[in-house]
Image 1: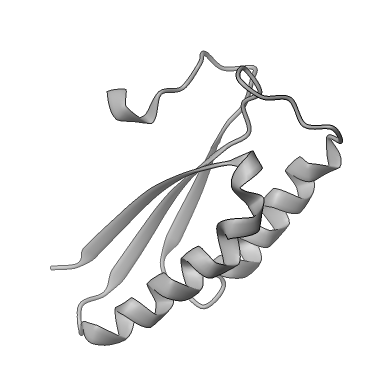
Image 2 (image 1 turned 90 degrees about the vertical axis):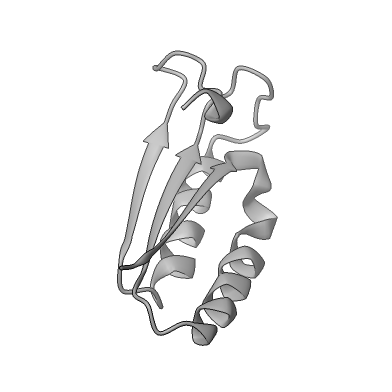
Length: 90
């Protein structure tokens, strides 16, 4: 048995990344089960446009850095080249 934690993060939520995964890391101390993390990094701009496209690189860098303490994680991305993604539909 393992715990699977799935999360959807939009590119404009960049300032919450470290706190989010630090809180999750602290929570994993209360289980002996392996924890797998699945992250949808949503870079779509259908609703909101960034003022600087460098935010996407910074977003993915910060996300990868925040996930380093975890032994099992997978990041998949959604971009504006794909159909509009509504996480509640999947």
